[in-house]
Length: 146
Image (cartoon, rainbow, N blue to C red):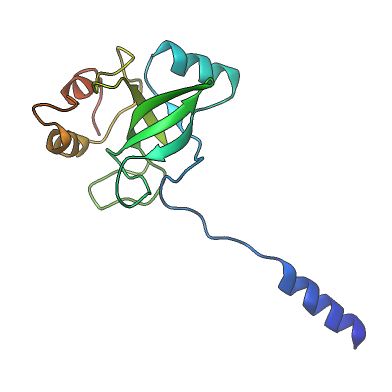
């Protein structure tokens, strides 16, 4: 009887947490453009990590602006693909993808290697305004849309 009680207490001590369905702080991302710093980080096996998400919710979804730590530097990026379950018209990706940008919203690379969701066009056009960042260049360097 005492052995069974000890076994039951041991099974109660094991905890599992639910999988995170969004981008939060310290999430590892995959740099999918051909910027030098992004290629260097992916080759070295130290992918970029999220430091800050620029929205009121504190969790990142597709099209959100994030700050990442990459190769010991702070860079900004746009989330272009997520592993999380998305809305019906947004595809689910195998990895969390980011494109690095500068402060003006211009991409650091000249090409995006993976397909990006077609709905990202409407999301980024809503976030582009006259005196702010211009995300249309990011859409222009994309080679494929899903």
